[in-house]
Image (tube, rainbow, N blue to C red; front, side):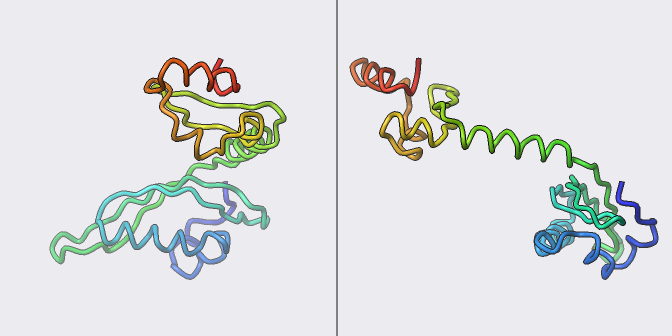
Length: 152
């Protein structure tokens, strides 16, 4: 996946060349969270493979404890390449965010997602639409919201 040998992951200094510079602080916080909580944690971040290409990784960090001294002595990482998924998500968000069609997702009588096009069509802001609880609207207001295009 990354092209690096296992030995290259053993020193803490090597992580600075493997983790994308914009995600390095987030990665360090991830490691600190594992040490302080003494529990497994997960993180999605960008890595840099041996070919100097960026790839998205979903990492799991598992602390190795020295129970005698009650401290973390090491962290074992496993990672999965999620680059394709992240690129697909990015393409989806670009499509939805730039769509000329108004889009909304309702869940449990609430608007949980909407795009800017729907805000422009209805005159509501995105925040106003996200605050709407469709189930609590009076019938007359529900008709008005539906006729404005928020729900069909």
